[in-house]
Image (tube, rainbow, N blue to C red):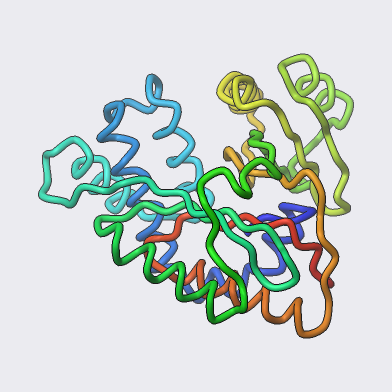
Length: 242
């Protein structure tokens, strides 16, 4: 789920994520498998795999699950072939949505996603109808307790490609261009700074304020999409009440 603050979203949804840990592991494993299939099982030469492994580490995913997912991607274990699909649409109140999926059955996935949008009073759009409202960025989130020297942290981030460093209260959020993401990630890791989040994300250019029943409907749509096994990421431009 994407919103104004990545850290606030993490805190807000932590309980729900813990309850869905098995499903979360399945989605991360799928991403690892696809990354390994596309560019090999060496994280040092496969940026997408390395990013997926960071996500797996942050989720405390068991090592056996990770190794099995990589072997499936390399063809050493039997598995399925996944396709990457991105669906765009509008939810209640004209809120823009981008839904990233990895699926072994495109017809099933698009049918499921379309049904959820229709039930929420929204609709799927054509390719490109919504994505232009989002900027693709790299993002790192560090809980403040992990940062021993703020000055050194700022200097390291800004000297190696960070576009912005934001104080969200309990955490620092660092954003950068997607080209700068791999290098900045390596710099942080070499400095012993392990991010709570390190990923490529879509950040909305503008947000749409919603409340009341519209906010409830949007949250229900987001929850339903995130609960779908084929959906990897859900982005929207709604500014939901805290």
